[in-house]
Amino acid sequence: MSRERRLTAGAVAVLLVALLGVAVGPGVLADPTADGPVRPGHVSIAESPAIAPGEVDGATATLTLHTRIGHRGNPTDNVSVRYRAYDAESGLLTTERTVELDELTGDRSVPVNATIEVPREGGYVIETVVFRDGQVVDRDRTRVSGLEALGTEVRFTESEAVPPLSVSVASVDEEANRTTLAVAASLTNGGAESSEELRVEVIVRQAESNLVAARDSTTVSDIGPGRTADATTEVTVPSEYNYYVDAAVYRDGVLVDTARSVANLDPTETISPNETTREVEFEVGDFEGGGDGADDRATEAARATETSTGAPGFGPALAVVALLGAALLARRRTRQ
Picture (tube, rainbow, N blue to C red):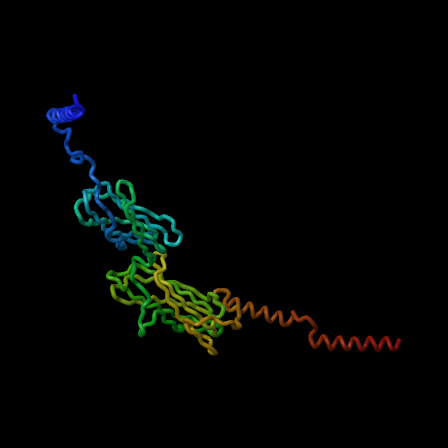
């Protein structure tokens, strides 16, 4: 048999075997991709997280995160979104939350919402990571700050007509060299709800030395939406000095706002709230003993004692006696 005939016979045999296989098992030559694995669609972050404050207490704040995840192509499952909050200063991980998504289909974006709880202080970097089949496919970072001010819209009043701090002289005790100042802090609620209880602390510092001369605190609550109220307190300080008057508003121990004013009790010079300090002479004893004058009287008594007994030499009378004694002694020696 020639070579051509052998090749033709072989091809016919192969064809017959293939036809026989199709007849016996119709699925043998089926499309291998019909029931095989399908490549998942494309997944990414369509919108960076929008961050809104939720519940707030004295120590923590709840942040609500709104994100949209985009998808196109074949149906995709096993997709998750992980949120992590890192401290903005230290970079340490504070908390995290993972959300599992249902199967994504079609060319569209789907919303993903989650809440995380963080300490109510400083700022944070919110990291959003999208996983598909355990592999990272997209990530985003968003920064949030000012959490210490969450939970209240009360601030010191900012108005040309109404100063945030008003300082006036309530009384003067000339004998004790003490002046009592009345400090009124004007607070405005810019929120939509009445305020909770707030603490207003007043600290009075002597201008040149920055020594704390007096401090006091008071509370104020139930300031209605858009309303303004005063928190008033009194402090007693040594007279004839100038002072910086600082006030701070706290909510649950968290600093919310600050303000500064001055009290000019020195008749020879004045200061302004934004003026730098200067070096001048002052009596430290005026700022001891809580302003009751007892230490001042003790200081004066000590000065009087020092004047009468603490001199390094003799007084005038003792000097005359000494001279007379020396003269008599010399005369006696001459006679001898």
